[in-house]
Length: 99
Image (cartoon, rainbow, N blue to C red; front, side, top):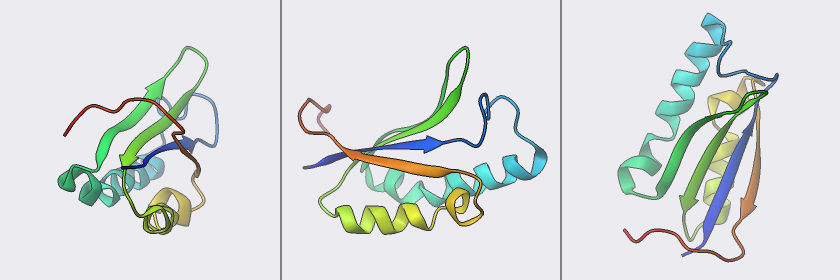
């Protein structure tokens, strides 16, 4: 099954560490938006990645329907509110844990 990597491009460095109240509400809706992928077991990993200089969101999804994934990502509250954007890539090779 194809594996896709979504990188959430935050609006500023250390976004995850410096959320405003309105951004926190949007990020809570963002997490709820992806719940179906988590509940189906299609989501391998999902959450913020923190570095000393930056933060970004990371999701790894296994799915046969790339178009549905892209459409779903486009409806994410972080995208529809203009809070952040996604960079999406398809893993060319590698290993993903078994289900």
